[in-house]
Length: 264
Image 1 (cartoon, helix red, strand yellow):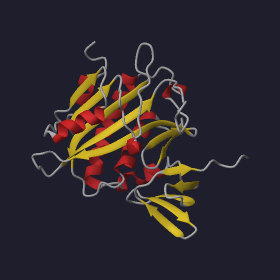
Image 2 (cartoon, helix red, strand yellow):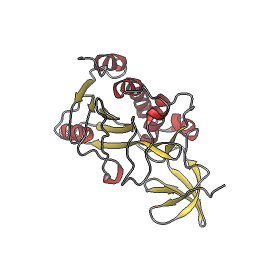
Image 3 (cartoon, one colour):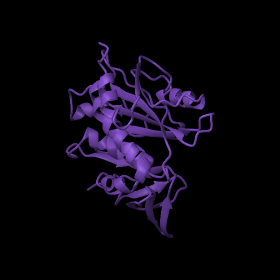
Image 4 (cartoon, rainbow, N blue to C red):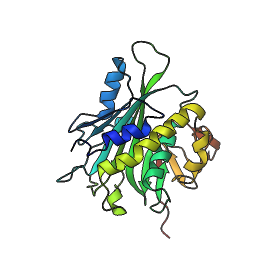
């Protein structure tokens, strides 16, 4: 069916704010984000939503692979990228704003306890549900705006956790009838709206919403440089605030690992 992924409905829903969005669904590709980045570098900067039923070389943060999970009849994960020209005054906190939008779409009342782990992960019950990758390209024609590519991967059905640093969670645990096309339709229109809001106002409109789902706040964390401390949430620019033995540390780019809570 031509509209099985709701391509026309999604394009129509975002048209008032983002006219001309092209919605492409492909059976297999190396990476939807890689493809949109290649196009942008060649000057092809049309707003585009690209969805892959299967990715062979999906990427996460720090170059980690993100593999699509497959069910017998349909994708057991949702993998897509949204590309559009954008030039905010400050890019800081964009991955957090995207996470807020996606979490609120998946779990509007917070009944499933979808949480956000700084800087780019969605978690449920101490397990990773999905990830976000933010990239930008400068088109060859030298236009002022960058081309923003937001890559998102979400587990829908059960998946094996062997080899993963964090055990996976999946949406079917609380929404057993959820499908990839249905979730795409729920996520993308609000996401477009929120990304454009970020472009106008930065992270400030998202700060309190992020705090309501902040996985790390109040917990002991360890940074990639070995520093440990007590996480006190994020600042108004999306920076992580960690109180260490030597004082408050502001983290803008680092790997963060959560120390397990003591039993009991």
